[in-house]
Length: 538
Image (tube, rainbow, N blue to C red):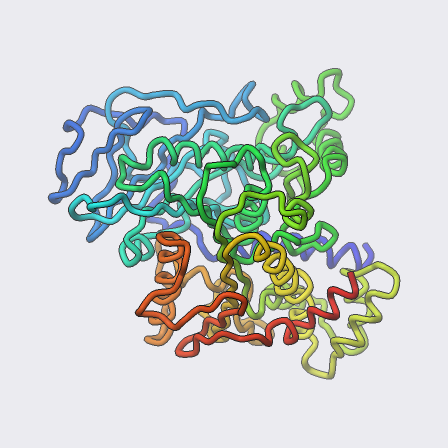
């Protein structure tokens, strides 16, 4: 195998690993089979548990959640019918109402995926569920803002239940909804004549948003004040929904974390979309690997294939397809033309986005040295002349090869595309841009990295969530930063402006650097990440 193919394949595999391996659900909260109805007789709606309502009436039936200290959770609520049998690769259908009271005290099954964030993976297609976290106490005078969270994981892994949102809900006095959506080939397969090709996972996200508009009021949320937020593939999903005509009116603000809308599919780390023709070609490859390539009815054959076989046959990374009814244009082109839903946006990336991938590749036995650097650069930037220009702009000396490679990945695929996205969006809507820069952020993967990672991809997430229900160890200064980040995010959700009297001023038209005891606006991020170089390189 060539160096180009080896490094690209390894890089794609790390995309999902870096975003998810650290947040596995704790053993004390095993996922239950989602196909189980989990209904039973119980007290009437409004019954108190510990003095607070844990039974709520949704549009499809009653659900019983869990009362915690200061908040309540309702887990595994169906927002659409199970996409199984003939509904595999079909647009989401309405959920089936249930009798009695549905148990919503445990997470539902994650959507099908290989082992990683979900211990042992998942093969349960009955996975279109969401989780609600809402502050406890008296009913507020006004409904609370709602934040709908889309998880990352390269569109192949991840689960809404990995994101314990109680700190965000209680400190920010907001309702947080985390969503599971179809992943991998089950979420993004494209085939000629298949309605919804390449966009089933995006359609699921829209179905969840429609559920929120219709039913979040029962949990104290304001259906007229919904912020759609996500990180990595979840952030790019927000970009796609900004450009998707059918998402009109489904959300009122957007938060995009490390998922720039101008990411490119020819670079293996940044999330992006691909043309329908390319998605169909990938679909034909999947059909051939699954033994259905020569079938008279390819889709009927694929619907009979076992989930585990499909997971083994699919590509490591997946992308939504554009030139489709749900996503008519590449989101980057739509945003550049001003054809997107004009809602306020909070967007940003991390100071050292690429270091996790670079460290993984170095650890896998591909050191970046002055001698190997030209070949490594060419493996990821094969266009004529690009690698030579990159090696000149980012020279590698004897001992700093890994961080230099990480800077190239971070600058090319995250920092500079985020700056471009900022410029395009800010022409039309209020926008706030951040850079998370805690160089001592708690590690997200096990083991000692070959070099200090700084603030790599996903390192801001423990400041917003208890990942997998397990809070990370933070210093006092990092706790203050976490509180400040939550304050910014939830004030933005409430008023479309993150500023408030308890936090440092966040001016528009600058980048706010977020680090412990050092939250300051900066105008040097563009130069620091060599964005003029990358814009010229193309």
